[in-house]
Image (tube, rainbow, N blue to C red; front, side):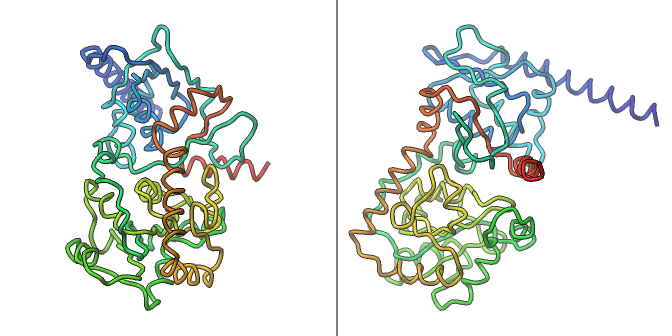
Length: 359
């Protein structure tokens, strides 16, 4: 047993050193664009996940070269590419350098970063908002959007994984008072306004036809996936987006993608209140709090006055630009010396929430 543990430690030490020195050498051959600002982000003690990738990507999208600590463990983890680790590995594909730079324009220290995302706003703190799917930022698909469409379907749209094997967990966990994605889908499928398609061609045909006033759910686990490159141009054909919770937490990237093109969220109160700042009924969303309210708000949305519809869309686009866009996040950090910057980490964030509750 002792020999086995020693062998495992040796193997880990060797792999950590291999990935560390390989990365250091490769990064030395990468050119750094001139006139770039420098930000040093100490990521030693937070979860290396998709949300951290997006956070770092926001800076590279806004004329920064990002520097991260010369930490063997961190560099080794960032070289793993299985499962959720793949998003962390994308960090090294960005304009990222290893080690602390001289004369950094901005420093985000390890004492500032926290995954305790569900702690209420404490003092001078900032919750980095939920962001879009990482692949959208990585491949630049946020630039693939045609001019924002004003002529849209009155129908409510949602595309995402609705597999009950995963998307009932939020209800079982008991942290949030919100029906699961699967529960909402099951409720809506029984309604006369529910509509499903077998493939992307059928969906596009519906978009181009006169038929309307439906709730369109695309279950990507059973039906079809919309290619990332086409997603936003599909989204902006609809006035409304049904914001359903994620696996363990209410927030999900689907909502942010929809808001980026002016879709008005149809959203549960719990979810709306967890946005920073909260989404407000009849200002930046249509908010419901019960099954009967969801049904009522859907029927109401079908007959909403055009002037109110346009006002809501303008508010949503303004909200996205002011709070959710990469530029808005970077500007917020540049202009404020936050004592704590909270970054989402799902399971780790829930573990920290549970710890806070028990204390």
